[in-house]
Amino acid sequence: MTSILTRLKMAYFSLTNPKKYRLSEHNRALKILNDYGWQRSKAEYAAIDKDGQPIPWITYPAIEYLNQINLQDKRILEWGSGNSSQYFATRCNEIYSIEHNKEWFDSLQKNLLQNQKLFLSTLENYATFPSSLGLKFDIIIIDGMLRKECVDASFDLIEQGGMILLDNSERYPDMCETIRNKSYFQIDFHGFGPINEYTSVTSIFISSDSIGKFQPLTVQPRRPIGGDVIKD
Image (cartoon, rainbow, N blue to C red; front, side, top):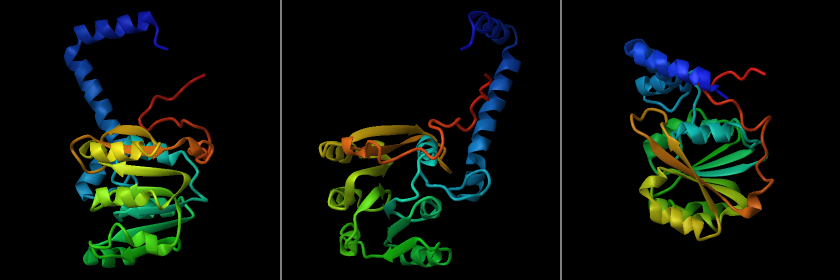
């Protein structure tokens, strides 16, 4: 915890050296964005981290949460494929992705990992297609087309205690209410994400049955990207 004396010194410094103080804060903010890989993602127009590795096109706080939980035995369904598919495939047991755009589908086929299952569907069958797989899923990601229809379909596809992720949820309050009315808790992750110059919200929904289902990989919470180094 920062002492009162330290806070007074910081306040005095900011008043007596306003330009230097603002420059320092500005540089720190740019460094944090660089640590997230935001500048690289914007330059390459791709959902990637600072090392060029694929990440979901969702908010960074939601990504940091997902980074720290163990998904190795989890089966995932996502509506809306892309770099998120690669990201989850390296962390989970299986991922099933539904895509409606043939050109995009063909481009993704070139880099599929062994545990990735990618399906091309028409828009008419987009939301209902996963039911033909005869599977239940531990995590369902709704980040594509026809989101209302996908939300409605997800309740018959989710495993007991499973997780639903809805991106850009600030645009869909009615859908959030629909999920909450199915006895899910809504956890909102506000903030920046890859590429975008604006903030948004990624919401994760869990139920009371989710307790114990999603365990940390190591320690939880992890030190955040851009966070201060803790000294004992």
